[in-house]
Each structure stands twice: as C-alpha cells, then as structure tokens.
Image 1 (tube, rainbow, N blue to C red):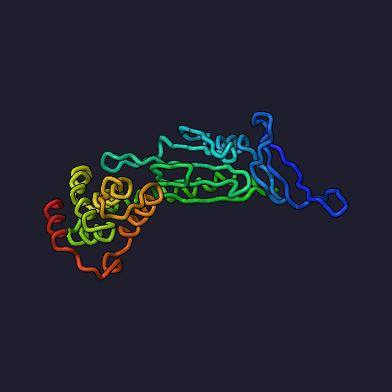
Image 2 (image 1 turned 60 degrees about the horizontal axis):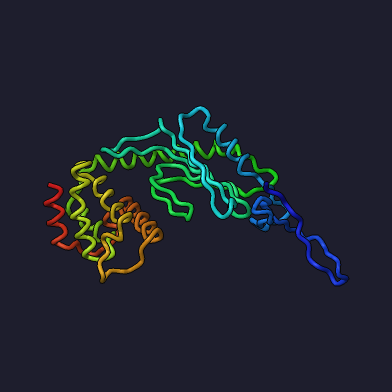
Length: 276
C-alpha cells in the first residue's frame, strides 16, 4: 500500500518540528518502508489503481488492447492503450492510434502521450509522432482530464497521418532526396548506405517522399548497422531519438531553407537511378 508520512527536523531542544514536506511510502517491500518520493504538503497522492480505473472509463467505448508496466519499484506506472479500430494503412504499414498514460509519485505525476507511436520505452525513448500533456498531483487534480487529452491526441494522429499520406502523393525528386540524405547522414558513407536502402521503401510505397522519409527513419532506428569505424561512436536510444527527430525536421522544412551545401553529384545520380 502507498501511504504518506509527515517529515520532521530536530530542533535545539532535542525535539522535532514539522516541515512543509512529506514522504510517499510504499509499505509492502519485504517489510521495510520504501521511500518513493519526498514532496511538499500540497501534493495529493493519486494511486495507480485510481488512474487505471479512470482510463478504463475514458476508453470504455473503444475497442482497445491495454497493457500495464511499472518501473522504479512502482514509483511510476504506465497504461499502454492501443486503439484497434483507429488506424491508417500506408503501403503495408498499419499505424494505430496509441495512448500511453503515466502516473508517477513525486515528479511529473499524471501524464499522457498519444498519437502515431511506433515504439516506447520507460527510459524515455519514443518513436513516432505524438502529443504530450501532464499535470502535477494537487488537491484539484481530476484524472478525467484524460478524456480531453485523448481528443487532442486523436487530432494530432489524424494530422500526422494526413501528413504521411501527403508525402505519398509527392513524387520524390533526385536532387531533393540526395540533399536530404546528406543533411540526415553523420558521414558521406552513411548517405550512400541510405541510397542502398531506398529501393526497399520505393518498392513498398512507390518513388515518393514517403519512401524517402521511411529510408531516413530506417537510418535513425538502425544507426548501428550504418556506422563504420571512422564514424562517431555514439549509439543507442539517445542517438536514435536525435536522428528520428532530425528526419522529421528535414522532411518538413523546405529544401532551400535547410542548407546551402551543394548536393554531391554522385548521390544525385544514384537517387535518379533508384527513383526512376
């Protein structure tokens, strides 16, 4: 069970005076209290079970799959909701609307991310396009706000799906594609390897901007396989997160505003060959 305990500090007489803080305690850890967080006295504990019940009420009218997981000895709980009937099919890839609610003791408290989320990890790594919202645990907090958050997330999902569908309608230009690969890549060799991967997505989606975007996100999620001995050695979730964010920026920004760097003629020729 989760309980609250007032915190005190010693005074000069050997006694104790109350502070304006309290500890959030988990009392079922092998008989020893486990301090999950120290918070001020305005903090209101909203238990994971209460959040779970509220989320179930919010999604009751939808066909969903729900998963739950915890970290930091139960300090944080995640409720992962996948909406089975809200999706979009782009080529052979199906994008479902997904919302992940987090309830935590002592930090960001109650939060949600929602949108076209491809993958999520409790270490903070998120892949996809999504909206984020959060509120602290205070006396006035009503977890039913999740209904409004879901509405915003669904709007963002539809907007992102429209954007991806719009990319499918644009024929990829070899010069523009080569320039984007140059701006995306950590080295010239990586840009060439992206062109080697481009046919995979051209065959799936056609010679359009969506195929180019998927090639760039492939680079972000499989950076280790692109890296050579001379390339930077930073790998892992943080690197992928940065590269995936860069892919969106590169695709959404007009090419003429991205850089004045000249396009490598070899890259442009290779892109022309693949796209034609």
